[in-house]
Length: 554
Ligand SMILES: Cc1cc2nc3c(=O)[nH]c(=O)nc-3n(C[C@H](O)[C@H](O)[C@H](O)COP(=O)(O)OP(=O)(O)OC[C@H]3O[C@@H](n4cnc5c(N)ncnc54)[C@H](O)[C@@H]3O)c2cc1C
Image (cartoon, rainbow, N blue to C red; front, side, top):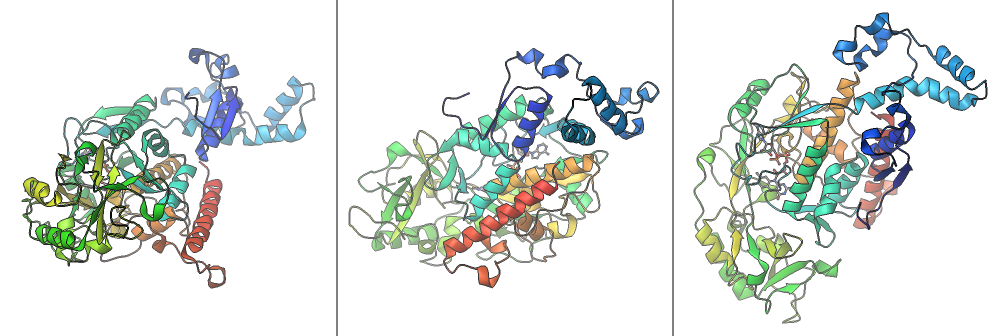
């Protein structure tokens, strides 16, 4: 335990009560510390001495048979029924009638639910990951949760869409957010991570979890005989993609995502580059490259005419249209579109001289210390690692040829001698026609044992994909317990995204968290100030989400 680690709940004693309390608190999103003096091999408190046996009430053996291992299910002849009245009688007998009647009633009447809840904690997961036997064109490392473009997990403020999503994830007990804390690098009000540390931490967590068995294998078929979760991302391809196509009756949509280049900190010209966050919000976590008008115009002209890379074989037929094709879904890759949320900078440049100045190159909230004025345009650089030795050129996803990237991006003031440690690339994206095939429980309508999570569902973005994983897991949990989980309310970020995914939409495109998809507040409760309005919407969402969690505890 690190000296500066903080916890919401500290539980002393790891017996049945302490263990259940710690688990229940963690399930509701609390950071929990459980302290137990016994060595690990004697953990479990009193249950260590009862060989793990639990006393709880049940009317018939048949009601509890599913909690037992298959080879124990024949034991009905030796396990007598134990109704609540017998449990209560035993409590009075053992304590000579001194047991508190209210507490006894809670113990007896909730005992079966508690055991069932505990049993559910032990779901065994077989996790299949194709790396390192097979890599997609964008994945490069062996670790889990590889971030392949930006290292930003976006804003943290509750009154922002990404901040609200994180709060809902925290309440679902997101482990990825814990890993992000370990890997955090400074980025103003945003959560950005050192991607290697983040991936290493997630990999460590998964491998340390005794209920997860990792298979480093490529999956090609979907076995529907038990619940299966497909979370193979936007680059899902080959036999598995064909299998999904067969199950959904869908020809896949291909469109394009692009990755931004990374430069070394030591190769920047600090006579020109200055540190500042927009409007001086938070620490000065970004480096800024200010353009004057003439520099910007020359840069724009070079960028708009720069040579683009031919697409990979798997991307063949790509058409880098300046406008997204609204009818692309259901068509083959001969009609593909550039994905708006990750649009290559050269395509933005081709849309007009000022498009970039109103997008990633906007200069608002910044002052160039050399001139004392706002620059004409500005490129921001965000630290890529904790040590701040590498910088990502924000918004510069690109499909230019690498030589062209060096030539054109070196025209950015301060990057004249920049050393590029990674050049930008562009890749295919694949996702389901969710409104047609996916239920609100994130399983296929026609194949209810086949669940989906992540970007392939149409939840767009790192955090959104992780949130989708948590939602899918809860749905699978509920299924295993014979329950049906209602979708989160639509005034929550998770609920609004699920609603978007499952609402009929001919022009369906993936969607990231944004305030626009949340229902507006009633008019008489709507603050005029945008920040206050967003905060009110976010607070309503958090309350609603917590109520959903409480009403549907698993
Ligand atoms: C080039 C590119 C850049 C992107 N940039 C950003 C960005 O900057 N910010 C952002 O928020 N989002 C970005 N995205 C979207 C990004 O993919 C998602 O946000 C997020 O990574 C999706 O998570 P996921 O878990 O659904 O899929 P992934 O992170 O792709 O994980 C899928 C995993 O499944 C494995 N796998 C795939 N097929 C099989 C198989 N048949 N058998 C076994 N294992 C398999 C893969 O190896 C991989 O580890 C980008 C996507 C691409 C393609």
